[in-house]
Image (cartoon, rainbow, N blue to C red; front, side, top):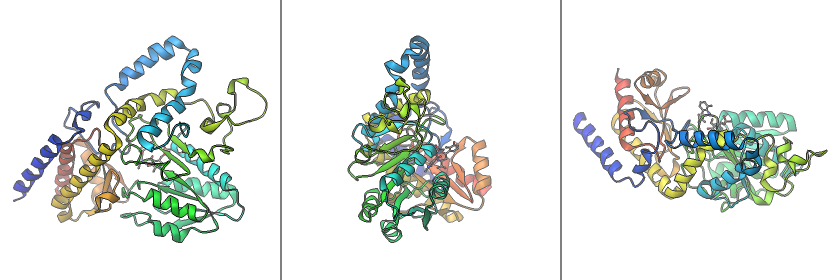
Length: 411
Ligand SMILES: Cc1ncc(COP(=O)(O)O)c(C=O)c1O
Ligand SMILES: Nc1c(O)cccc1C(=O)C[C@H](N)C(=O)O
């Protein structure tokens, strides 16, 4: 019976791969011609095959050939040139509002402080966030609240569902300055109602900072359309920028005049190379920069942005929905009967591009899986996260990974 079910599910994987309009993209990534099952692209995306060539060309021709001239000729503009491409391909952001800079943690710090400065109302003394937000987001606002003498208002998030518009309405009011939330929850994969929550925060006069780490490149976004204030996100997950590639910052153009970010550095100053006395911000999104941009770290993500522009975020989201649905189907067939719990929404439209499965044995199971070239990640206390990258994950790869979880659990 089980073999029969397994054969049907494997046939289903083959059928889904054969019908996948994005299937050809998988072969553009390094390592996809092996049997390794990579289910952690939501932590660190795979590299593209073109990346070594792009980086070598940069070293030999740009860095090695142009030397310091490279800054004037191209590199000084790269943070906003790539930012604009990201805005167009992924974020739904018109040019001039997105820049690549710093780590996500530092970008979020700068944005939250800028948002508080933009609110500029002494009666607004609260930052609202949820208990299940990513650790760096929670620690940052704990620090900022201490620096600024503010209070934190915590929304109790159900880890298997997430933060709802109603919860935000209940938690916000005339004392709210800023709301900080993740669009896709790092643990459950819950996809928050970004337009609805943004509107709810605005209706009480607050501003919103969105953490888009798990949504950039996996779900469709329309930041301009939703009138989002500020947003930040990683580029090393679904954008394949590589370990530690710099983050992006989005500042809605209505907040750009007079933007007050807290780290005043020469690269964010008007006429940086005048090296003049006193800090005067550069016009536009450039004022978000602080020090020398990490050009080297920005190179790899350009390859993926080109692919996303070609494939389109609508098709990417469609494949992501099919991947998570198939993962849930395999969970229901093999893991749920073995006592595993789904710690993610059952409704496909409420999911980002990963699911989390809970079982007390999963810490040891994950360690054993990594030994077998099956690579999900483990999130304490007992969750296996199954991350699915629409451009590089195949249904057969997902099938192999879920079958290995089942088999390892039985041992
Ligand atoms: C939601 C979220 N925010 C922030 C971060 C981390 O930011 P940083 O790039 O600064 O480590 C991550 C992942 O590491 C994340 O998933
Ligand atoms: N940023 C990471 C790192 O430097 C090392 C290991 C993992 C990560 C991650 O990206 C974690 C990830 N954001 C998460 O959602 O858990």
